[in-house]
Image (cartoon, rainbow, N blue to C red; front, side, top):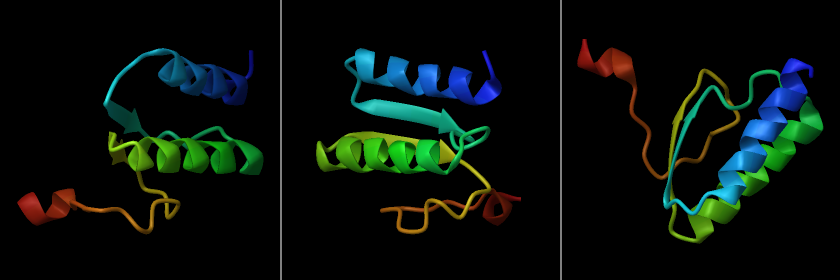
Length: 75
């Protein structure tokens, strides 16, 4: 499978596990525009259900987080 399809499978696995916390490392890597939109929708749904989503990313995709922590502030 391509890297993009493998990433979509990993996102599907998130939905199959009952967890209140998601830990995502560069989740948008290897996703096309539709995949990124799907990811953003999944994150919004999880957040609306009072889920906790922790994302490590360089992407501008996550512009409106409830809390943002910059690692360079802790050097």
